[in-house]
Image 1 (cartoon, rainbow, N blue to C red):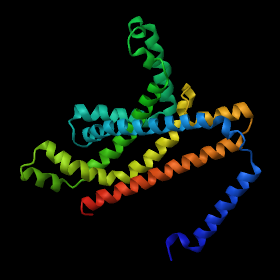
Image 2 (image 1 turned 90 degrees about the horizontal axis):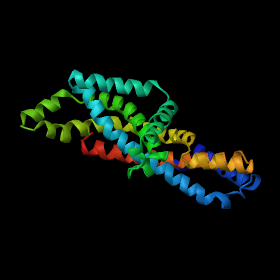
Image 3 (image 1 turned 180 degrees about the vertical axis):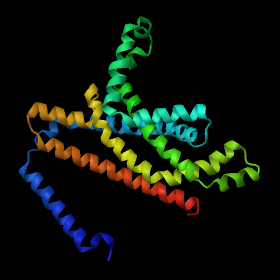
Length: 257
């Protein structure tokens, strides 16, 4: 019998279908035609904020982790301080400091207001992207530090003995081994990053959570937008989990684990 046909899972599926039928019949969904376009725009903004912040954050996390794991003290100390600062302060505070701090300084300089970058800098989403990326980098920098240190030193020494350059050792052995060990944690942190994106609504970025809030404010319908929002987040989180599991299988198979 297939795993999803086991009795307890069939009961859960039946309960989920019953709940969906009850929600479709008993709750109000007449607001969806009015707001669906705004909802699609908000969903798109949530997704690209998530993807870009994860990509940028991970690109920063690798050197942060490497500096702490094997770098000289003058590199390791700033990397450690950065990760401690990011992990020790709330993300909401970081968003506000960047938006209301740095963002409020730019209009005071005429040469910035007259530059080609001003149409970009006057918007809220670049500051949201910076804050999300730095937050992800701070947490994943610690993850990568542990992953780099977990790679057996003997493998690195053997590669050097075979004449590999330092960059080749890093690219072909150290980084792949560290990634294979870090992927389960990276997957969980990426899901947490998804659930952190609603915080950007506090600086007027219209993502999917902000759309649900607008529906609630305009129509005084409270539960239905939140239920739909929860389902959207669950669907995205499920896809992320499946994607990272596929990456884990690929990396562990490629490394011979």
